[in-house]
Length: 237
Image (cartoon, rainbow, N blue to C red):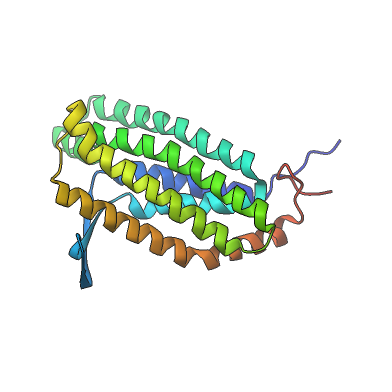
């Protein structure tokens, strides 16, 4: 029996998912601010969002493409293995931080940049495991009702709802619950927390709308590059 080749698109999507997830974990602690052309309720004339927002939004793009091509079970494996690998990332980063450094100034700067607050890590992990699994479930349920039609609906519908869950959980836990209840980190004012939630969700929703044509493109390219796929995600004979 000849060995089946691994689909190129499958490897690429796993790589994108892991890259975006790793980047999000390492950039979550920095808060970004962007000016708006108009003033919005709560946020005002600018939006504030965690540095991980853009990278993290790409994980939903990758997982939606993965679900469409390889099915619900394969996507859930991707998401849950990614969750476990977060701990491997944290262990490797903290091992490097705590190891003796040749230059104390460089070591201090390294730790300041790569050691986000425990509240950030705690909030991001809880939000990740719940919202990513929700994304896969909703995407699959919409696909079960619509078949291969309306890819845009399952992409936007699953991402919009899962990103709302992720935003509320992450910001609420990282900047309100963990600092106030668990005594981890410093709690932000409620006005800032509200602005963070709205700003982060607006950006994620915008990305979900923009990336829909690219989801169609990836699916089309995958079918051309890898050929018809079996139910297990392997190329058909």
